[in-house]
Amino acid sequence: MTNNKGITLIALVITIIVLLILAGVSIAMLTGNNGILTQATNAKNDTAEAEVADRINMALNGEYSSLLATKNFSGTADQIAATNGIEQGTGKDYTITIGNDGARPTTGGIVLTIASNKYPEIKGTITYTPATEGNETVAGTPERWTIDQADYPQ
Image (tube, rainbow, N blue to C red; front, top):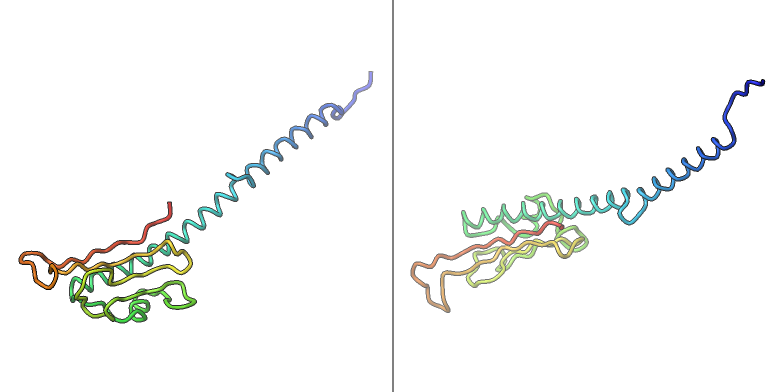
């Protein structure tokens, strides 16, 4: 009798088939519509959008505090941007719009908007509601500042 050492051809073919099946499953898990690479890209985009929303909300909260304390904004749109570390204007990441040229508003409506230029759906506003009805002051009705913060991606 001969003593054969090694593997048979059938064992080799079965091993190769199993490896091919594992490789196919791994590639599908990486590159499919719900694959790891797609999920990583989606998570990266959601994080970038959430960061934009956070920056807008931080700037809005700073201005809201200034309005409650002084009834005025902390400065011009460029000053607000510089204070909050954001770049605003044409070709920049954000646009800041101030009603009433930064002065205390006398009519109701949106008085400050901070919007993302990259993600147009992400914006926040501060709205002023005067303590008047028409041209007359309504006794006991305080003026109101309302902040509508930027929404986070879903």
